[in-house]
Length: 64
Image (cartoon, rainbow, N blue to C red; front, side):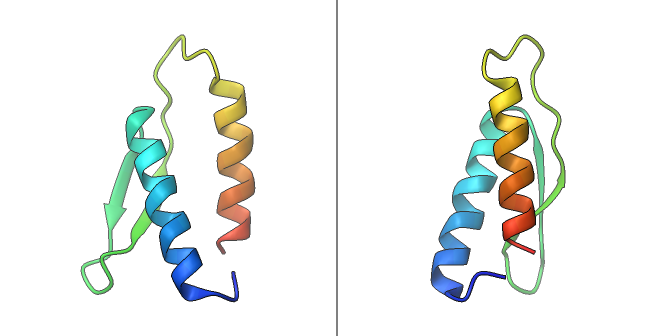
């Protein structure tokens, strides 16, 4: 987990925004209202799809 909670919150928020823009789904915790990445379903024919998958995998691992 990232040592700075505020930075982690901002990263999670930005990541949630990116996922939604690319057609993904986000579920929010009722307690913290922090985004939880349930599943990433990219839109078909997305030009940068492979970059998105790689970036999301790296960020998900970093945010654990």
